[in-house]
Amino acid sequence: MSAFLYSLISVLIVSAMSLVGVVAIFFRDKSLQNVLVYFVSFSAGALFGDVFIHLLPEAAENGFDLQVSLYVIGGILTFFVIEKFIHWRHCHVPTSVSHPHPVALMNLVGDSVHNFIDGLVIGASYMVSIPVGIATTLAVVLHEIPQEIGDFGILLYGGFSKKKAMFFNFVTALTAVLGAVVVFLVGTVNSNLTLFLVPFTAGAFIYIAGSDLIPELHKECGLKKAFFQFIFFVFGIGIMMLLLLLE
Figure (cartoon, rainbow, N blue to C red):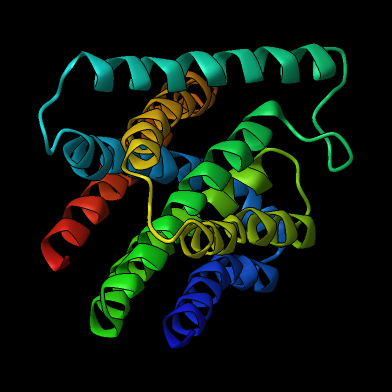
């Protein structure tokens, strides 16, 4: 029971990281609008960094076989279908606060899966021991801060209001609680579940970053903007590399 309570508190702390976007409230809308594209660039770099520095190496711990490849492709294909459905529902409606851009909706779906995995990992670590659980929680928190900053920026860029962006970012973060509960309900993490979810999420992130975020960056022209987009893109990758060293 104590391990479950520790796990529940930990995933709530991790979920609270999604509220990091509260700092955006203190910025004027016009000033915020000017930098949102750089949030998108940062998030694209962070997603690619997360895939190739964290998720794929974890998925390939026992070898990068055909099964891992198919799960990655499965993630890409699934999010292709999801985006087709979103575009079909939104194709004739302009982006606005009441009708957000599909890139924002895609990011919410991908982030939900990712946070669910975080909950699985945290719950399983507390079943090993309390100290291991605390260490794992700290690693996840460090990982989530830059991720949530990028996610919040994408929601604003996609047409969400500040309050709506914070609300939905927090709701998707709560899937971590669901992940932790699932672990304790089944007694342990089913190895087949994690073997599937990690590369599947990698595929989802590859699709979102490559098919949704990168094209958004190309809509902004000018040498100065392109330069800062590149800097923030590399910064997103660099943060993920730094987190690897800290872990």
